[in-house]
Image 1: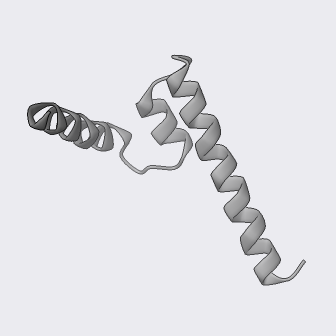
Image 2: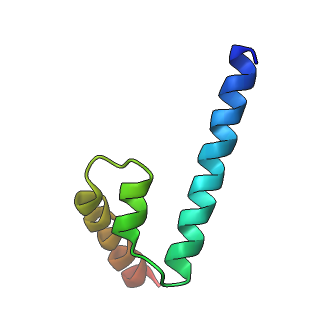
Amino acid sequence: MDSLGDALAVAQDRSRLVEDQARLVAAGIHSRRRAADELGVQDPETEFERWLEEEQEAGKES
C-alpha cells in the first residue's frame, strides 16, 4: 500500500473508533472521559471540564 493508501486506512480506522466510542457513550456503556482516553486525548479530565462548561453555557442560551 502506498502512503496515500496508508493515510486513508488510518483515517478510516480513526473514524470507526470515534463512531464506536460515541455509541458506547450514548448507550451508557462507558463515560465521556473513558471515550476521550480511548481516543488518545492527553488529558481526558480537562477535556471533560471544557465540555461541561460548554454544555452549561449552551443551556443558559436556550
